[in-house]
Structure formats: structure tokens, C-alpha cells
Image (cartoon, rainbow, N blue to C red):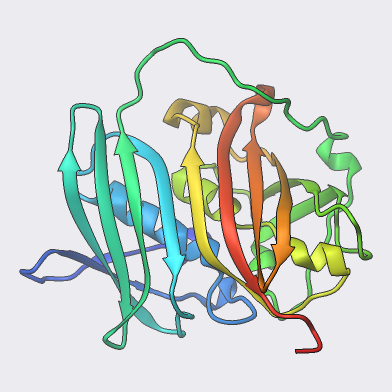
Length: 269
């Protein structure tokens, strides 16, 4: 049986002579407060890139800018390969719906080489996943039902001066981790302004950047195990804030980092 995530990120090539265009369709299981969950949109872009016949290596970086909400239904993704070097490849893309651009972005793919390496910073040390209770989001946030979320800190129970959330996270039902799924997880942190205020409020991602540190082998080793996810905000004000997140796998392997710019409105506005 096909996993709902694979249904939500499926693409089909369109027969167009002016470039590589694929068509995707929103899935109700990944609806957000307004439009689809941005993480699944970004994941669809990564899947389409990996399926492109000229794709080189593995995803290294993705930036997607959400220009407008995507309406329910079909949308088209145009991928443009702008340069291929010996070990990396650069792409631009646009998402169109109803003859209007609703998102755009850039991506970098690359061939990973064996070199010296190190990870600065420490992985969050959490209680065993089975010792932490799962937390549900309100029903109007449909996409969250597709994740098993077990918060150790920052679960939106009350307003806090610290916007940090740290949790166990995995697909629900469990699914082996791959690059599209990892992409989606980097957007699975609720906006940090919710935690600062202790309530839901109008907010939405404007720009999401994900850096992929994991190799295919490391993702295969992770399998369907829960990852450790942590995020915090930096500065809030003037209707915007940024938040930084990390996704850690087994054996303290840093799988991905992410940074995003988020728009928000005060509840009274």
C-alpha cells in the first residue's frame, strides 16, 4: 500500500517543449491553516529534482520562497538546470497555479566525496522515545496528524520567554527516511511565535532553506526510526521572525539544518 506521504508528493511529467515541467496535486491529509503544509510542497520539489533525468548526486541545499498560498488542486513545477559542474549542480524552479507564480526557489545537488569531517555542536540528549507521550495538534492543522510528535521541551502548553522546542519526530505511520521526507520534517516545527505567546496566531513561512548533511547511506541506516528535532527563534518584530532548526539521527548524526523567515500578525490585528 502506498504511504500517504508518497501520494502527496507524487509528480507526473507534462509534455511541454519549453522545459521540464511536472504536475503535482495537493493532498487533503497535508492541509495547513491556509493552503497545503509548506514542508510537503518543498518535499515535492526535492522528489521532482531527484526524478529529473539530468539530476546529479544527492540534494545539498534547497530554498523555497512562498509567494502566495497554493489553492487545493493541481499545480505545476518548472525545473531549470542552470549549471552542472564536476561535483555540483545548480537549479532554479517556479511553481505555477492558475497562470500565476505562487512559489519560486533554488536548489543545489552534488556528489559527496570522502573527506575529513566533524560536527560542531551537540545532539540533543532526550529520554527514550517510548518514555515521552505523543502530542496532537488541533484538527484544523491536518498535516500534523501525519507525524508522531513527542515533545521534551516547548510543546505550546503556555507562553514562554524561550522559543526552543525539542522533540522526537517521525512519519505516522512509520516510513523509511529519504530526502523528500527529511525535507518535510525541516518544516514540521510550528512557528516559534506561537510558543512565545502560548497560542496559535496568524503566521506563515515566507522563505524556507534546508541544508542536507545526510548521505543516502545515513538515511538508509536511520530507516523509520524517530529523529531528534530542535528549533528556536532569533529575533521577533515588525511582523517577521526567523527560526533555526536541526534534525539529528541515530548515533548523533546531524542529518539536516534549516532556517526560515516567517510572517506573523498579532492576534489583535
